[in-house]
Length: 243
Image (cartoon, rainbow, N blue to C red; front, side, top):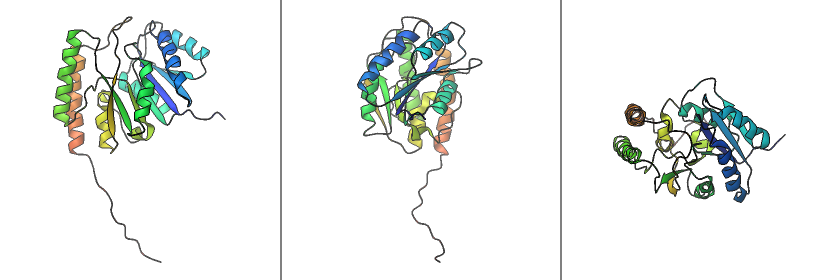
């Protein structure tokens, strides 16, 4: 029986065929400095390009890589959820598959887990259009204001969690934007670290102003309600009959 890996890297994929091989090579290179075992789980969210074929070749070539394929497009939260449920590692790392994030930042996130339960990257120097940057600033401000949070960059997908942080988190569509808040609601400590960010070379963004702000605002109201109704108690004594 194979020993379970220490780390699981979960990556949702939707129409990213031109990015996947470079991404796989980047992960392999980045993880050479990590002495513990790891696995990589690509979750294909119903891609309509050649992503599935590329993923199969990568998984055939590298035994630590696995692929899950959805029957149809279900969204990023569903892809993360499937990856989490199939992950075998004690620590889960998340990242997009669009090559805008640097796998070389993963070791620095893992080091921060010595002092926290979850680590969230924030894009110190974003390499996006001004429309995306402004919409992200607005979205972060509104989310933090209404959810009483202080997360710098909720939209940054490069994160690392101790797996127990996610054990009691129930995900619904759109909830991937609120991982830090959901984890903090469970009583875990979250810290932030700066990470690299690059311009997109291939493919196209799956987000627009409508689904980046309007839909996430609806989800934010749900999270705000959850926080206001969250059960938060501590048992300080127990009384049982003494035999």
